[in-house]
Image 1 (cartoon, rainbow, N blue to C red):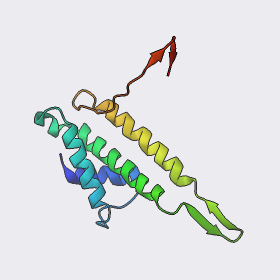
Image 2 (cartoon, helix red, strand yellow):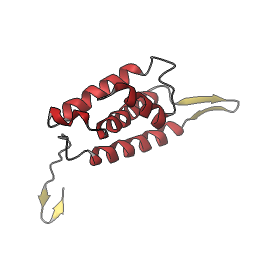
Image 3 (cartoon, helix red, strand yellow):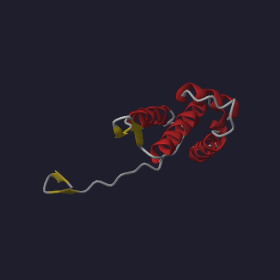
Image 4 (cartoon, helix red, strand yellow):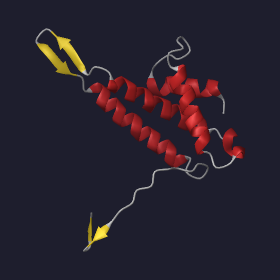
Length: 123
């Protein structure tokens, strides 16, 4: 996987210039490592879709970090909560899920949910 391509895609997805700063490097590198562990075979590591998946995952992880910070904003009238981080996190998650689905033939996912049924209703 080409790390420079992942960084360019992260910049496209997030709007943050990761070439001008190294603060995003740990998030990008850990996302690339996580995607590499998902790949079924090492032969698939050259697939361009994995760069998109890694960048989408890095964007999602960075949005999670932003949401974990102080969520209040001080204004003239007092404090108010910022909703734009929640919205951007939701869209980052949707984009990550879309790329995860796009790569479903070359990766193994650990998203497995057990569902129990009792008396015809889902529990």
